[in-house]
Length: 124
Image 1 (cartoon, one colour):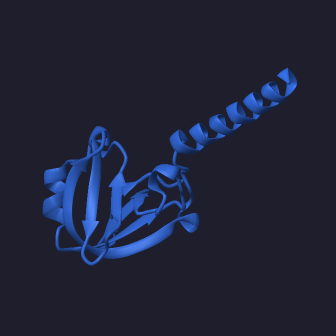
Image 2 (cartoon, one colour; image 1 turned 135 degrees about the vertical axis):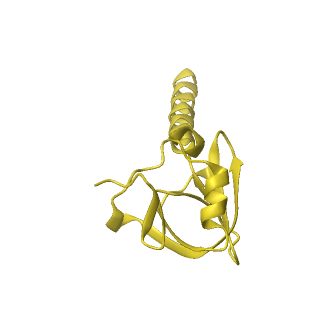
C-alpha cells in the first residue's frame, strides 16, 4: 500500500512540476524567419501587467504586448504619437501557456512601421 502511495505521490509531484514550468517558463526568443506575423492599424497603446506595453489593433481582439517594455526605455506617450492610426507589423513567437489557453495574448518580439524598427528582440 505504501508503494502505491509513493508512486502516486511521485507521479503527481512530477506532473505538477511540469505544469509549473509550462506556466512560468520564459517566452522563447526566435529568429525572424521563425516568427509569426500580424499586420494591423494600432488603435490603442497602454501600460499593462508589470511595466508591459500593450497594443490593440483595429478589428482584432488579440492583445499584443512588449514584456517589461517600460523598463527597456520605451515610452507610451511617444508610441501613441508615433503608432496610433498607423499600420504596424508585429512579429512574435508561437507560444502557448495554460494561463492564455486561447492564445489571445501575443508577446511581441519586433515592431515595425513604415520600414522603421521600433522594437526588436529577435535572434540575429
